[in-house]
Length: 185
Image (cartoon, rainbow, N blue to C red; front, side):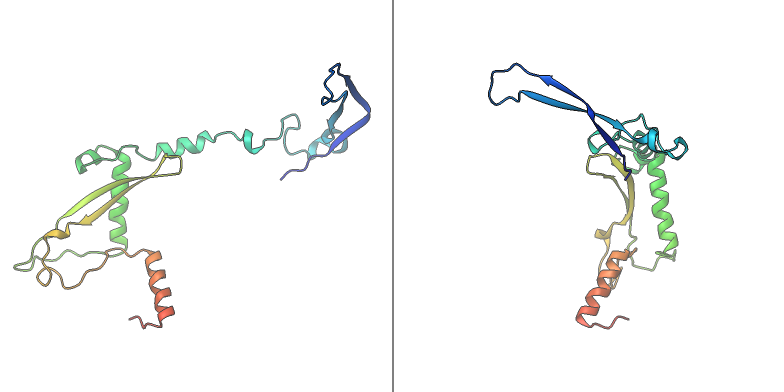
């Protein structure tokens, strides 16, 4: 926070006379002359900002249009219902590539030959727009999810798990295991 020295010159006070008969109104109003002491007490080379510009308060804060435009230029405002609609928008394509890169980085799946009698599990893209408190789109999110309704337990799978574990879920697991004194393997 910047400090500003203010000098009130008492010798040059202006007095204004009022002629109201109202008893509640003041009869004499004193208006002190206020001067900023920037220029007189400090060398001009040590002043960081322009002294003629008034101090900005919270009420006078200006909207940061560059930040707003930057967010808009990297997000899409549409939320497509199908993959064909998403493939027409470059921002949603980037979100899809980001999701596939996440799978590759975490070694989520490997390509194997189809076992006999097993059902092939389909996948589906789900697209969501993440918004802030004001309703502005801040991020496009694309998720590739398995269509699990075609699976039969014991034939297609024996156990279930999330393909990508979030750090929050791992931390929660560790904290619960510490509290309950579980052994994790």
